[in-house]
Image (cartoon, rainbow, N blue to C red; front, top):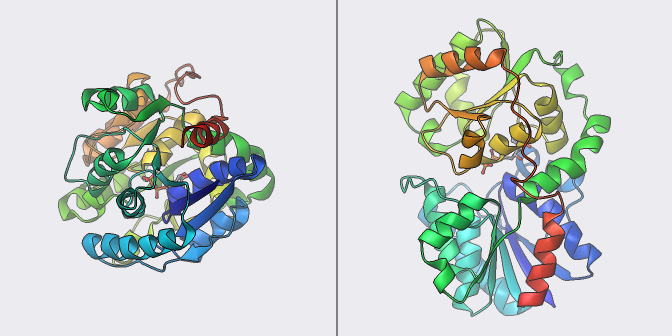
Length: 359
Ligand code: UDP
């Protein structure tokens, strides 16, 4: 039994860390292809080292291209690898160009495709991620859904009338968070390095094209950040996509712009923040795992259950809404943690077992 996994972007390394460990424990041969979508040390190497992700067997070095060119080049190279390796199945994660290229290359060669984080929808087709998700789900044979909402979406799209395996598994990101929590506490010194005190700063990340590439939205979010910085410290690990855009701007000293951090530092920053502001998919859930309120700088979210739990608040790109929501949440106790949302922390093992029994 041989499984090929395609990964290429930061959140995929984090998800793969726990799934690859499950493959090793069950003695299944996994061959990892790293497409190169995120390739430098702070966006890639640090995760492989800290989280002990097995070294990729193939590194495709595809990055910095337009969506079509990137996906096309990946498709071509992944196909070559698949012809050589002849795996029993292809495993892909999430919603990036690497996900779609992996799924399409395999499906065209009649290799069964398994999709981890299947069924998520924002219902906004202007997002490149939404197109990648929809197409990848169509190409997949085993669809591993992290939430009830994901199952419901696939039901609505008729997936239960097709010969596909669609199951709710929970979220492998919850596995990663629980597995690495203690290690992060032991190993990370990010608070000391940045002179941060527990519960005295907000944690911010921003990287979605819908915000970073839209001047009006970006301006409005930056305005909200400046206003919040009048009353709190803001720690912001800056995504490479934004670095050059921010370089020309000046921020108040209470906005701490730092390089992207590794996962251990991220967990520590989350555990000690008093609130999270983000447009990241992963961070919305990690804020919940750390029992922190999340202000989501988007108009939709795929993680609707966190909005229902009143733990996640969508403000879009609206400075006033960001500031008002922040102040409303500041003194409010965090809602009771709903342990039924994302599994028991052993989702990766369940997925790997299901996969090997069903291909
Ligand atoms: N992350 C990290 N360091 C950072 C920023 C994010 O380790 O400087 C982690 C974060 O904790 C989460 C994942 O990267 O697990 C989210 O990735 P990203 O926001 O890039 O993608 P998305 O989740 O929106 O697809």
